[in-house]
Image (cartoon, rainbow, N blue to C red; front, side, top):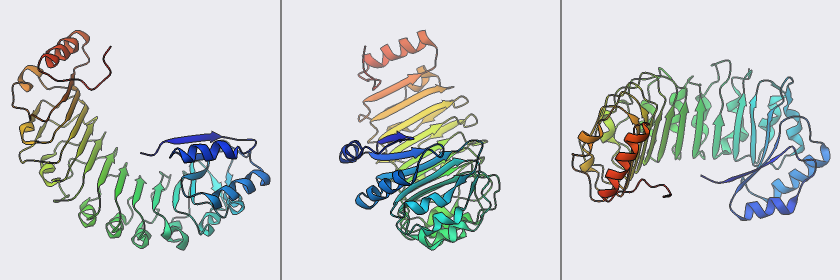
Length: 339
């Protein structure tokens, strides 16, 4: 993930500071939490938007107790990366659709009523898009099938015509937040998808997902999630994060996943079994935190010779200290800086 440097409510623009951070490979975000900008500042920012690519971003957020006037974005027509998010209200929202150079857009307006806004022709050139949660769930995702350049997509809380996401052939990374009840079968059409993260919402499994090319999978705090038997379909998997899944009883790697290198299992309180680890021939790091797995039984199973970092935490100080010492005698490290 690209590092960020945020410049908060500037009264003047320090071009040297911005350029230095961009040269270090950071994303620079100049952000305003209220109407602290003026035409002069917006004009200077617009010049920088012309000079730099989408690593230089402008953000408008907050505006607590008032409504953000999107018309100010007409003063930065060269902007390539724009965040208009963490807002309750906004007006003149159509002004955003006239920004023809946009490559990255984060839109999160809670009281957004323009349910067809994704039909904007200028949005079809985006390569990154974040769609934030709104009060109404009527936002129409049907238009996403026209977003042929999109590589990164985050959707929070919206499901209307979500199957259109399956038509975004270049999609590389997909985050689904608070998405419930709808089928995930559209993921099977995303042959270039490498990273899939599902958080919040509710579903019992991800069984709809067939064999795929996904390399990074995250399953976080999904209500009712209790089955990950189709992990065998993720044959290209390199990293796996399972977090806050309080109804998941077991994880069984019944078939070899020869690319999997990094597993993190965090706060899965009812998880009592994790088997088949010996079939993960490239596994380098395994971190298990706050589960119901019995360490003494767990450590007796065969483990791959590739495994170097093995951390196992119960949150009981003395127990964890003994486990860490035991693992150290076996030649494992916990991957953290030693005291």
